[in-house]
Image (cartoon, rainbow, N blue to C red; front, side):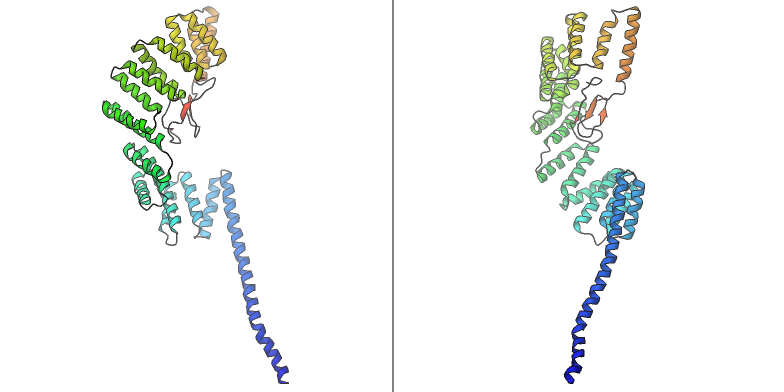
Length: 395
């Protein structure tokens, strides 16, 4: 009897852990459902914000991300995305406040804080607060935290301030840190210094900077061109010819920039036969119209207008060009009269209007178009990427 009475109590004792485990399991499932619902809500909002971004609706995207930031204040990525959106929209003050708030939080990991500091530095740069940005990036480099990114930002600041010595110093540090060559960029910095020295009449100093540029990049087109200008200014026109020809051999794409000073030094050194040989060789290697027009003018002086027109007509059949057509019209206009002359004048005006506003150069990195050549692209800030556009209405 006793055994029979104890049996239900024994069963109850055995079931207590099972009941406790079941209660825990039910609670866990309920919590998981709530957590899952919250996660789904967060994910849905996040992807909705991304969709707005992809559809170029930044106002709606900002509204979604601001709600996300309020809903989950521990989501660092949301704050970073919000700050980036503000900066892209030009609302730099709001971007700075978002990133400053992140930097001031105590629960960030070192990596998260570093990313927030980098973003804050970019905000300062966009706002024109270069001193603050420089100090912040200097601190990151000193801490060796995301140092390559910080160094790149510092180099950008020094380029903007035209502090080429500091730009060179930090470019060399970046080169040592990443193992990636920065030689061509450093050569451009030395060329900037050489140009500055030349402008102030310090030719020996300019030549020293060019030596450094050639040490970085032996076939630096810009350095050869500056050397040519220095030699011409010193009266060494044959030496200038050599320097400009070396520039053309280094990169034939820069022929439109090289030809004007080169042709002047051919004339001053009485080497027009050499000029003809050079232009004939370049025309074989370069598809633009500039050397053709230069050789046409040379033929006009030496052999007469008829020979020049015949040469240009043959070339235009091989390489159609609006600029070449204008030169052909100008060369034949004086020999026409009456209705034919009027037609030529109309055609010349049309071709001139066709050329107006046309970009002659384009950056190979970002596509920026310009009428004049720039050694540094005004848009993406890369060096040596702005080159002539080859086409019927361009080079």
